[in-house]
Length: 251
Length: 288
Ligand SMILES: Nc1ncnc2c1ncn2[C@@H]1O[C@H](COP(=O)(O)OP(=O)(O)OP(=O)(O)O)[C@@H](O)[C@H]1O
Ligand SMILES: [Mg+2]
Image (cartoon, rainbow over all chains, first blue to last red; front, side, top):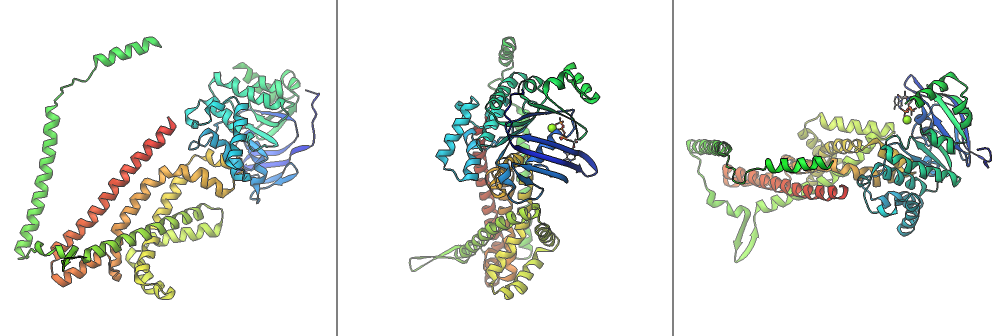
């Protein structure tokens, strides 16, 4: 993974802290992700992984620190946050497709409403990405009619339709039946090979080894270790990451 | 797997419901329920009839048809009840539409991040809920109407609209908060503006939660509209009061007025029920 052609910083997080009431969910997070880079975030449950990546597109508001996305600072309560969000694709653990819209409408709504693209043109873009996630034949179905794996692939296509500069994945395969996981991971690997910048929260260590440039290990709201996959898996530098890995592999 | 299904079919065969099953006990139970209801209604009717007899009430049902229509020189003329009913429908219709608009504005103001918006909305809801409707009506008629130069009909419409609007607001807020949080997040993550997020994602999904109670509210608005008779808006109830002072046929008139309200609301309830059934069938055939 050293032959990567890493470019300019896309996401720059500096001194980020967040509290829910008095509970410190994130503390002094520093992380820079450059264009083309693939970062995998892992750590025990409740360690703040979701909270951190959700701050990037302000689904969660932080209290301290700065976040820049492609040179623009994102802040709580800012105006035009939607312009930043259009550059940041997000895939959720529970898919969150729009159940009242057909698959193709799930994909066209963003481009049509955000960019004023015509329905015909938006449909063309949608079909392109549905083909890319190998699900074009389901275009006219409704999300509840699809399997979990199919829904998650639609969700990835929906995010891609906005031509984002970076993709955030929050445990995209955790809610899937085991036989569905590979299909979704394959799509993500293809995406990585095409050069998409990605931050993935996942415990799929095979995937992490294959695509990650760096592994970020979090515990109790802090980044404990950042390392290349080989180093992290074979030679973790902290006790907490050793414990985490042994528990993960123990299962 | 195949073994399971096999057992299922034989089980179904063995446990088939007999074609000619005549449950005598259930039949008798139904018969008894119906008789009790009939007897009760008969007793009530008899009591009213006896009461009327005791106060020597002079029933004059033969005189009521001109309340609805008359034929003068071969010409068909609608009677006062027709015009009263029309006014009631107009009043309820306009007030209903305004109530929905007020409801949406208030619900969104209440949920908004704006302190001013949510405070004003909360104040409005509390004020409406904690004062008698009739006092609100007097306020609209004697205070606001002269200030803004509106007539009694519009004073009545606005009063009802603000009254029902406060309930509509809570129904709408409940429906919107009933939509899964992930849908809000997905809308945000897709970069939709707040308006587009609600317009295309949230509100359509909240409709199945909002529509049944909201139509119930609009139907009851027809009943509540009777209160504007105290400011003499010439709707159904006012028409009834006028007819009584002209003819002294209080019993007949109140029975007729009650019957008209009853017919109106029951017809609407059944109609809405059918519509909802159809919508449910349509939306569930989408899904499964
Ligand atoms: N809305 C909230 N209110 C209060 N506490 C919250 C809220 N959201 C998250 N937390 C807390 O913040 C901490 C971090 O949560 P987060 O969801 O980011 O963890 P995570 O690393 O993604 O865990 P998981 O692997 O279970 O998804 C947890 O302790 C959680 O209980
Ligand atoms: Mg999480």
